[in-house]
Image (cartoon, rainbow, N blue to C red; front, side, top):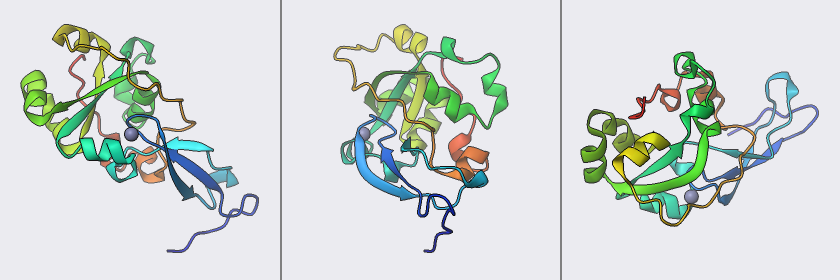
Length: 171
Ligand SMILES: [Zn+2]
């Protein structure tokens, strides 16, 4: 693998936090040259399962991570914008989440569960969490909001399935 160096920042490194729980994974990404020779974000998350922390990856073998979002905090019409869905949903996270079995996910969310089963995570509006009556109990670890929602330029550009419009059960 080769990398095009940034004239200003060289290999242009950044750290990756777990997309699910927000913990540092100690993974380093070398961004190299970015559009506009921009500096890499210090911390970023990557929705790709391989970039999650060990604990969240392990949990995903048998469970699907539910990530609570507060859709009231989203800009109006964000779902129509497509490309920015992931970014908007990421910004709307409340910091709470839990993991449920595939079987429970299917029972809870019916048709929309397939996306979660495939990707091993799903954004769920907090109204839906309330409606279902999932016990919040201990608050999940509150992730520090990283600078950008993804390290993958292709995903950010919307030609990756990471940016798929995800049918939120609360929508
Ligand atoms: Zn994690």
